[in-house]
Length: 304
Image 1 (cartoon, rainbow, N blue to C red):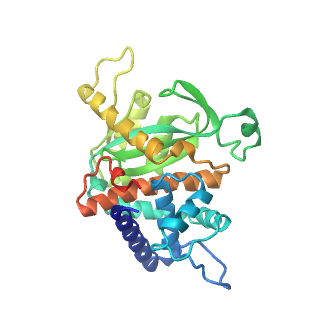
Image 2: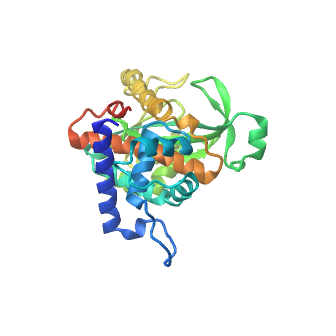
Image 3: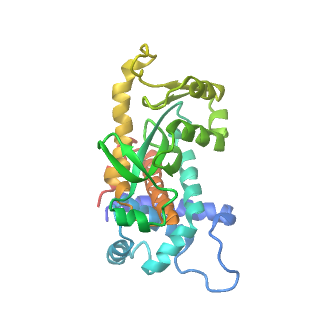
């Protein structure tokens, strides 16, 4: 493993361990009577982050790799079934850790956000769709970047220009991007209340007079390209380069973090695998910020 990766893993472990000491209620619930797990919750979070960062979509292969190369970091490693169960129970801890890391960077207070959604495919064959536990949540939707339909979910992301995830939601493929964004901001009102005059950049799908009025009431100024038949809007010259930034963020999740090959088959499985990737992205940016590395394209230093 690279020194950069060892350094990141150690830093995340220490941060998570300190967080759990300060707020033990964040730890997944377990029976009051029984043996304590040999792999601590802080180690579990670190192991989950490293799996996503190194691109292992199979838990069995990941644990084999960890046994061979990571015993200096993890003296004990669980079997695949135990690892899977503990990951699902740790969803809340992983989510909270990601937020704590994000807030511990200078990017957290950036006054410009970008918003977009990206497909999270969950199955291709008709038989898979019929048998999947995701029926009722996953839907058929259209992916414009690949010019094809897919069956699955959409990850809606609000990020800084440096790629730091600020807020997110996982919805069915047909969910309206505007309604989802408003729901995200309504769920966490402090995000906008603490940032009066925030600028939000989106694509042509984020349109509508009522929609923009609701954003304005939250103190958010929307910048987007003009739709067909509209007059040119403010900031039009910025959209082409900024669109490349948004695509770069999505490509990091899809290419480097293998978002489209998550291999989950249940709602809980999809949720934790998406959160692993958000944690990996956030942790890499957080570590780069504190070690003085460039923020953009922050995952390249951790390739194995």
